Structure formats: C-alpha cells, structure tokens
Length: 129
Image 1 (tube, rainbow, N blue to C red):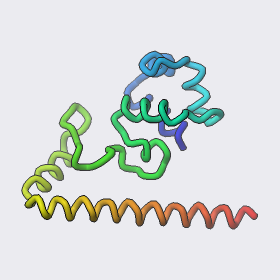
Image 2: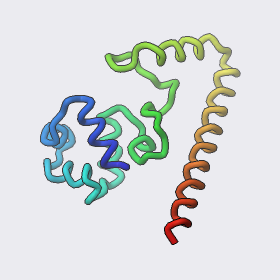
Image 3: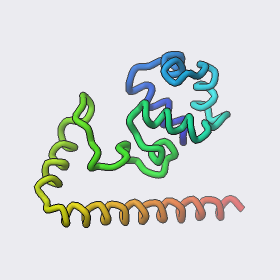
Image 4: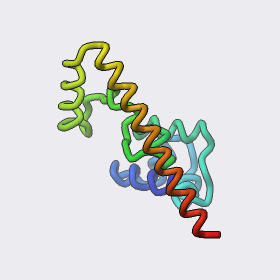
C-alpha cells in the first residue's frame, strides 16, 4: 500500500522518481524500491514523505483514505480550496465545546474504520489458510 500511495502522490505532483529522491535526500533507486514494495521506508523517512506531500502517515500506510492528518488542520493552498474550506467554515461557527465534541466523534469514526479494516484483513487471511 505504501508504494502505491507514494507513486500516486508523486504522479499527482508530476514528479519523477529522481525529483522526489532529491527532495528527500534519497536515491532514485530507493524511491523505486519503495514504489515497487520491494523495500519499506523506516519511520523517519515515512514521516519525511508524509510531510513532503502534506498527508498523514496513516494515509501512506493505507489505514485511512483521508489524506489530511486532521480535518481541522486544513491549510488554504492551491490543492485544498472548495469543500474543505466549507467544512472548516462550518466548524469554526461551532462553539469551542462543540468543536471538542466533533474532534472526539472524528476519533471514534477513525477507530471504527480501523477496526472494520482489521476485521476485513483478518477475514482475508482466514480464507488463505
């Protein structure tokens, strides 16, 4: 999953493997190995990749399909106009207490989704036996 996500993010920015490698102080071959899933980045490099593409590590790992690390931290840049800003605007209209409740609710949904994915993976592994 990591390799596919890295390749997709790289292509979305129209970067070559060598361009990404230069940005991360890695070799083009290392990026190629990550994208082909023949090698996995260590935690520090994974965090560097996430920071470079402005996504969460959970997104790179395939634990979520939400690129943003947290919806409230959406920054206004060239790729995040539109619905994200509308959501942020609506959240900002809420009281601080309601915003805290919303954060908790989002965390609960993330846990529920993670549990669902874990169950699906477990089911797939069971069918392989």
